[in-house]
Image 1 (spheres, protein in one colour):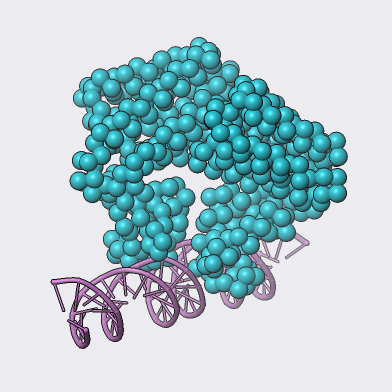
Image 2 (cartoon, rainbow over the protein chains, first blue to last red):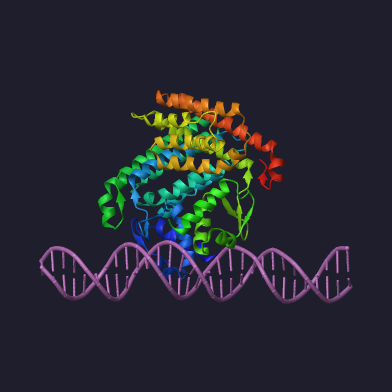
Length: 221
Length: 221
DNA sequence: GATACCAATTTGGGATACCAAATTGGTATC
DNA sequence: GATACCAATTTGGTATCCCAAATTGGTATC
């Protein structure tokens, strides 16, 4: 594993895990000393994370991307387009057995499952569903969208009932795809994404003072 | 303009302009001497072009991305999803006057317009149409897709009739968007993209021997 | 006390040196 | 003539050094 991949992976995890807060300033020298790498791999990693949208340039200097409520809305539109396209492709496949693997992944979450696991499974559901389409670009788009949504979803206040509803909606989508009903799958997926977006934006909007108090930059919609 | 941006821009133009052929090997030292920059900005530029899909790693070393017919098919599916989503958004806008600017762009191409200009306008039409949606992610996706298609479209054998048909289809799409008929616009755009893909892949498939003779790596569908 | 100004520090951009792995070219052996 | 092997070269990965611009902190002036 090269130093650049090392720095990239660890820095991404720190950002996605909110160990480095949204809006925080980053200096190449700090990263250098933090991970024990020289500036060359550090800069390479920063360039890559920039294309992922996790960090951005702030004039001279680097900044962890803030939580941007308007952007979250645009991402929802974007992912709806690509996820629906992917699910339509998958529903038209002859072999849709990959669905069962995803269903098993959902079922691995129970009442005592830690919150981190729910979070990961919730993201992976959409990524793995897109993967079944066999289209690399749709998959990449969904993965990219989920990466950008990851931090916001982590900050979202979700009760037991919301988790259960998402779980049920996921299963309903899978059932539609399994039966080959592309229209039904598209309908359910669209509704799921729209509802997910509404709850997410509403939650962050309501909590924005608390988030800012924690040092997290939140850009209004 | 930083050296990194300089190298990135010039190298991108050389690749998209086929001055460096698909499949060709690149060494950091050659780029360094070619553009008079040191390795630091060269490496930064290579990392960025890699995320654009224009170059890739070939174990140890860099390779200009080959023309991949299977990939072109996947890109068509991807761009159909995002372009249709964008056009639906645009058709629902109150102010759709941006359409006229795009129409003027199309009309600036006439019988004596050089081929390069037709090529550029053909790509920009889709990018600018996506921009009207106001969704940054849809725009980025379309721009990315058109960048990846650019070299292949340049290699496509297009007769006068094909150019005229594309021009007419573009105008028909604009007319549907202007009238606010999202369904019609989506239908026309889908058909346009599918037809465009079929002609492109067929043309490159038929010419693949000639392309390989020119030193261009062509990966079969 | 406010402000204009200057020096010291910090920071990102770039250049260069070094290294290990891989490639290459030639040579000796059979 | 084919092949195995070794040295020289090439190449990407990394560390380090230098520089100009920007930021900062203090100081002198009004």
